Amino acid sequence: MARSHAEVALSLGVIALGIGMAGVTATLPSEGGYAGIGPNFIPAVVAGGIILLGIWLSIEVFAGGWRDMPEHTDKFEPMPFVWVSAGLFAHMALIGWAGFIIAGTALFACVARGFGSRRIARDFAIALIMSVAIYLFFVKLLNVNLPAGWLAPVLGGAGI
Image 1: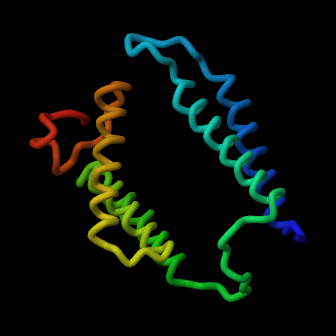
Image 2 (image 1 turned 45 degrees about the vertical axis):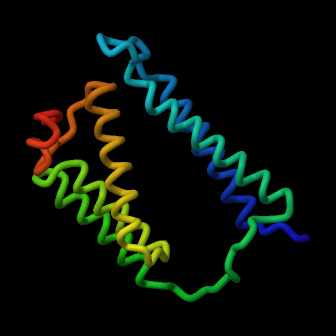
Image 3 (image 1 turned 135 degrees about the vertical axis):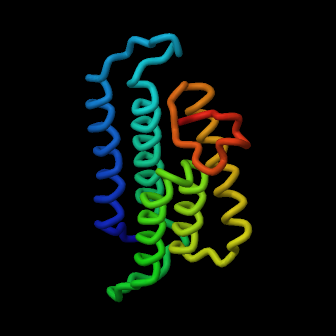
């Protein structure tokens, strides 16, 4: 089976992106404060994840190509672009006054819709659970203040 040059290039590009990010992360200080971990911890985890994703994509390409991909079309589909863009703008507009959890939930739900999901209630439920988990991870474990917004009374004043 012929390999797609675009799939090979994208797979290797993702690996290169991860390696570049790891290189930049290595320049960040690693000393942990009272939290015990330094400012390079999360970027290092993300860089490692990107490298693993690139390796996985490369394995798929060289094992016969990405599976279950729709046939290539040159036609631009505007609605996925509109949904993802709307999610990004909603996140920017909401994070300051509605808080991280509400903004993250809106972003996830819009991106899911942009990627073709029609299960709105499920998407909002998953988005809310993930946003709360990420918020608590940063606020409680890493001691990074994120805006609580409307949910500040429920969260007991956690965040800023």
